[in-house]
Image 1 (spheres, rainbow, N blue to C red):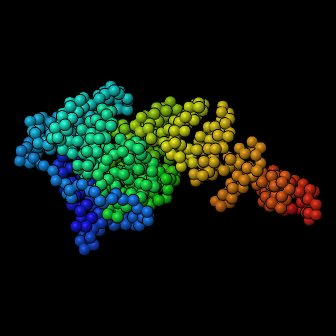
Image 2: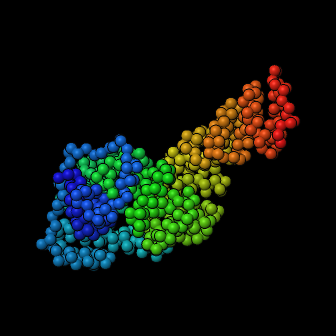
Image 3: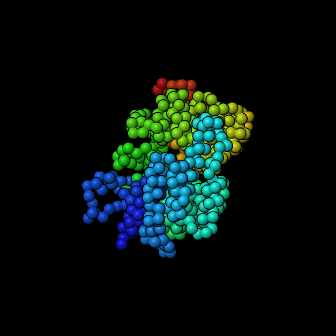
Length: 577
């Protein structure tokens, strides 16, 4: 059996088992990967080609020669998922409980299964109790603090669930799904080390539950923790490592894993979206836009991940494309957090910041842990000069994910607006630690060092140098390096940076005051160095301008004529106006 056939059979069994246990998001993920496996051309049908058309172009575009894969040796899994189903023991009661669960009547589900002892029934009963506790916790939070308020409400089912699942694990009577739920409970209670151990046991026993891998990923906050995990080899491990690498900002390693996985899952929309995320983090917006355009052609009603696409369109100021996307998701599902964020971005780009905040708040009412909405709402409050509200929004974002560099950067901006540069520096440093290749963050920190309260120009220069080496697309760093070097009387360094800045402006065909400033300084500098030929070139270029710089250039040329012996006679007065 080929590798693709093996993966296909494994996923088919897993989808049924996950759906039977009401793990619908994991079943959906598995089904998407199943359809993403490239079909045998001899077995192609119109339905296959219709779903998979177009995806291969992205695969070819991003394929690299360096591919990292999980070794095939030492695989300890069975070829297809096989579990004790307990069908004969509690089948009828289980069917009733599952129907209650599907109607979100979680306590009725647990009540029906109270006397059932099969592993599947025990898992569903415990899972229903966990969700009932979560539902009650959400209700308490809204009653006490409102939909966006902070609250100390807890899931009151966690203690009893931990006790029961711990006993089952010690007795060896818990299945991989029970271990997944036990790990989830331990994580909620703050027992992260034990939660990692239990979740590793779960994925080693049953690797097809993506929910378990996702929970394990949230506990892998450093590369050392990741390397300490004793994970068996399986192709699902590659999906996990690719996702963890992305969270740990190891974007090239993540891309390598996803490109390897595309060898089997050639048409996986999930993998394409993850590649787009990695490219987004690397600020390769053109490539991200290409991927999302193709994703929408293949899956026109997709809302998941489209908020990131809207961020790209916002950054590129694509009004019409963002308007079309906002209209599209509004018609598809307007009460999804992603949809609300996309519409919020649209109004923000139009400058309607109050309306934008309304939609970001709506996204948070739908999911108060939706990280992007907190960060984007903070940006809007900064635009509205409402710094206390901005600080609160950014703090809520870093509470959810301390690795979100955008929120730390936002806090730095907010404190800079409040003329508190030392606080601002603290937050800017956190942001550049998390995203060291983003020139905007280094420029923001440099500008903070330049403020009248700090005047730490040497540190500002170091930051601008880092920005210049990080593909400063806004062309700020080189000009500021030249100005600061000039201010510190470092003429040679200033000339070097002005020349580099001038070359860049010429390459990009940009005109403006920065070019005039560079030409004036270089003309003066080379005259002082008695390098008259080079000085004359810059002076001649200044004669094309109509402002006071033209008269300055004429004066410089006169001075060079007098200072240079044997210099050919030049009639400065009759130069063209």
